[in-house]
Image 1: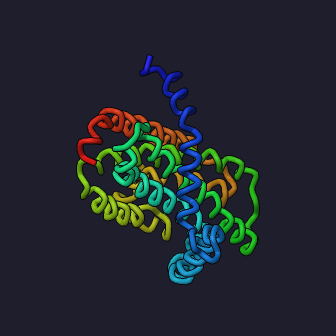
Image 2: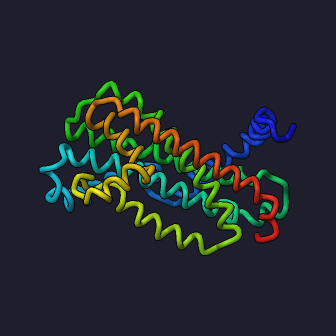
Length: 263
């Protein structure tokens, strides 16, 4: 009975209020004592986009139309994935004191961290809207598919967070290793540059083995080029999301009973 999907959903609903409060807490803590508060969700990506556009536009403006939108779409998605997984990585170990005192499903903390980061990312799309208006970019009807792309990325990030969170309980150095991985991952994702500028072999590696490329490409197709993403990348993005969720949940559930011994 306890292994049925219905039972798991029932347990999740029982703790839905707790998850909501944890999400609210994370968002409030991030902007506590900040003069601009939640406005930073818009200002931060906007200011960084301006700086990076000034730096890189001279290099790629002949190859990429509407470079500010090109840059912002890639960066917002990449920053969400990095921020969500880095927060999720520490979600269990960071709540060790609470887990030792009371029974709470351990996945609740990971789920709340990724969800709060997702909400902050949704706020940051205010910067995306401002840049589209400022650059007089057209609003294509294909943009109605953007939420579906974000859901794919959310599920992928959540699955990866479950995987990292349980690894971090047993091997604390994973935090530093993953930070280095994220740096490399950022530069191996065509955020600042067109993928065509890379050697052919590296292009193949990125297209087939970098899940972030699937999500960034889909998003740009809808928002920048006004076309429906190719079926291959949509299917690829869905496969990455499902595989990572299944793997992350499997490893998390398999090892969660041993967490208390290492916290």
